[in-house]
Image (cartoon, rainbow over all chains, first blue to last red; front, top):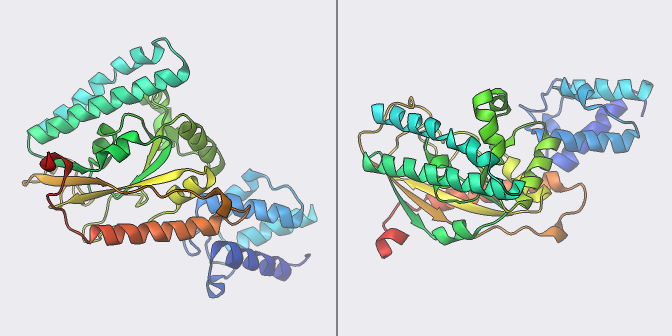
Length: 82
Length: 253
């Protein structure tokens, strides 16, 4: 899982399977909280899922600024490179 | 209009007795319970005053379910400004989730923490706090609508917080249905716009929605919370399609 497409595909799978989000609604600039209707508890779940999959520890501060699908992809990409 | 201000003033001034109770001897748990009872009594007085001046008239159905409840998530729809006051006046052991910003207010902070209320901090901390409060037999009052019902709606769409907290703390939910006959004290009016007509409010306690530990497997809580929220929302839509009527505890006696 190196490139952004793979990260996006992985993220989409999580969003669809765990959070009942319609695949058609997922785009890079879709906002997690408004358009995809996640709440703060979902965000915690999402971070846990991402940690399990990437095997990296995610700092809560890093995730605080995350607003859109693209932000998550960037955060995961940064994590994989570090 | 002035009586409302008067009532709030009375409420604020009685807050001065809470610090005394706070340092009254006893375990932390006993002190919290004592303050919760005091707040409930003060709210009872406030509701009595609102009734005396003809703002609201509260009747109840199956009230014993609410008064027996321990460690439940008490949810209710939210038609008016005074819902939380009415609910807490009927519950000797109520806790709430309160805006975190109020914790920075030096006047209110002491009261909030002595009564065992919870700041709405980050999701993780919030869940921990809820668990702790629920373990102390406190019932947690949550309005899943998030804010008062928009005039014209039966209910606003439910947020998933209440369902999430119930599922993740393995708590039962006690649904309370608030029915009013005239609109008033809504979000769309200013708080000082007192309705001309007395609001009759019926407080009906429904059967608990029990939690099922066995259905929770690690990782599917998010889905379960969604399903539970949809179920609760449908339950309220169905229940509220039945209008307010006279089959209440008070009138039966």
